[in-house]
Image (cartoon, rainbow, N blue to C red; front, side, top):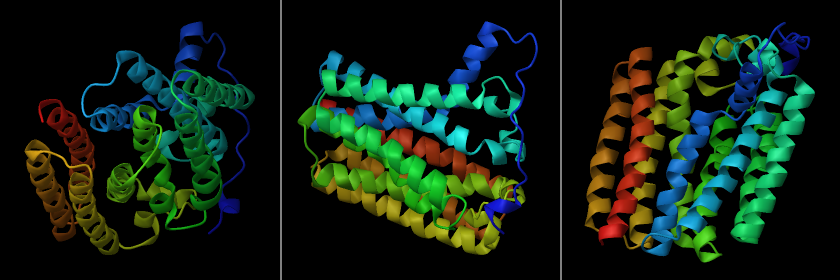
Length: 306
């Protein structure tokens, strides 16, 4: 199956009488706020570790603002490109480009404007390295993941997930104006965390992906194979968390949290392999979000009390 199997979808007309607030919320929805929120959860603690304490409020706000704009722009471009399959998939049928709340040209202009402002803001208030890293993540997400891999390779989210790992490099570069082994290992942690996180969700929506010929692993491989790969990547997540702890010389709170959270992560993954149900998959999906949130919170607190 190829992307040509997806029927062409005409541009949705804007609903009559659409209020200004509804249109504004449509533009906000283009940025995928919940995903942006998760990216910011990883950026700020990374800055704390890089600074070995609390960075200046101005630097934190500038970095978070620039990162928000860059990630939001990337997500908006993703919706622009995927509006044809979004109209077919049940999970995405209410997105603003499908309903007509936002028109395609408006979305593209909005997205590019966010990227330009993000780059300018980070360059002017943080440093050039952080600006380049933030925009490079967008370019990778759009051209490598969305336009190339998503519809052509079962490794789409494995490789494409690198874009979501870049914010930790941005946060580190914002503080130190360079990257090194510790942030690279933190990048690796999120890189290997992304497949089990996303595949767990994709298990529930595998029929949606099949309907639009997107070769997400749960849609083209057996449940057993997908669950086995989730176990492998979950173990790699724990290994990467330990590697970062060593490279960044983290304290006992981080090490204890990393061990406990990692054991629970792997336990949920193994449980999914043993009992292959959507319910178990969604439990792992929700835990993967909690895992990342708790680990990075522990990382920041560890440095503030270390």
